[in-house]
Image (cartoon, rainbow over all chains, first blue to last red; front, side):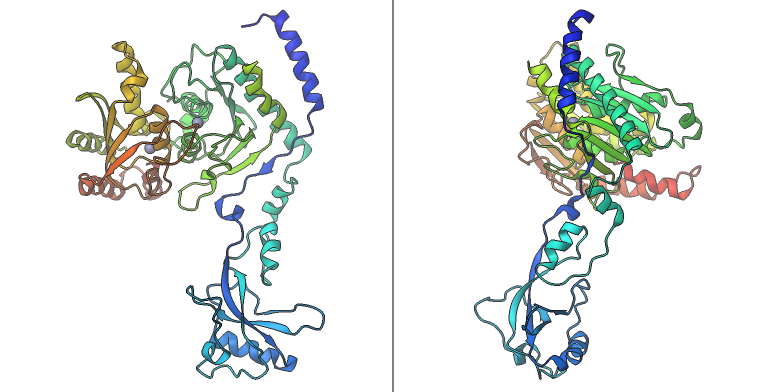
Length: 340
Length: 165
Ligand SMILES: [Zn+2]
Ligand SMILES: [Zn+2]
């Protein structure tokens, strides 16, 4: 541990580096489905050679070949210029051989659609699912016209417009506490990762902790420490942190009174974490019902965006929002400070 | 596995999700765990995490190297470990896990994610799984738990509780 005299140049150097950092943005980490690339499936379409037949064709096709599973697909597309309109006939079978196209009478054999005005059918890739984000929509529309019900909040979050300057100032303050804890842990030989839990409603910091895997317990990553510290604050907890003075919690009597015995102690709370958590920690946050996670930098096999997106899985019983990039520069340098 | 099932029953009687497990090293039981989520108010206190702590305590008491002990420890658990516990078992480098029934809600050994065998360089080592041993008894106990109504709690709370494993 360095004395105050030795700390000062360090502190000054850090301040200088922070002045050089570009301003940080809180970037939404999309859940699995929303971040996926646009999935495409093969369909048959045909040009409408007689424009006057268009509405009748659309009507008859919609009745005879409804696209029930794909309500997001528009039936007709205009290619612009002098090219004829094109109409979607039906989905191709999964075993469709792209070299052997079916004819109109093979595709529409039952006579429910009068094929008058239709040109030769062709195969086209169409989006298999409704787009969930604007980038997905733009990508999908390049293949076939697609309806899009935009989620305003997601779009704002992706554009970095979700948080006001006041929000960001508060977020920065919370992340600074996590970084401070990480440095104090590192002075005790711990892995330099820090975390803080904040009650979203009151803005109060309920727990601050650092990674203890090299000391107290090999599984006490900073997130696990903070979850346990919150439990300590509510009269529970599994470990004692008196050898680690930078791991602190705020005793909470509100919860003890209003508590219903359920261990979902982190519901309504945000976690600030200097780096993306591992799968164990990300799932521990599902079990604890955290509301949001803000982290600084990504980890090589992190579970909230890099390798997995455990926060956004529909098959798990709780989901939470994740933002990355908070004080990215200082969080990034935490590892290097210790290495040097 | 008998004893793991008995521990699960004990958890059930204590109002915890009925999961029990044993950590066996050289034919010796070093750790026994059942869910302690409600007692500690910490939602991460699953049976496996409790048992890992007991093995660590044993190592400290007997002056053994935890890395060596865990590398030769088998976990017997009534239900497939969840994603969190599967990652924790990897981090402890336990080589083999024998479990009863699948964990459709949270399973980390194939049911929801395949943490046990994934290539994750900074999350310990993959481990081998042997599944299906006395699965029916384990499933029955989980079903009893989910059906069981705490007479003091409104229905919604009982419903929520079933989600903690
Ligand atoms: Zn972790
Ligand atoms: Zn578990």
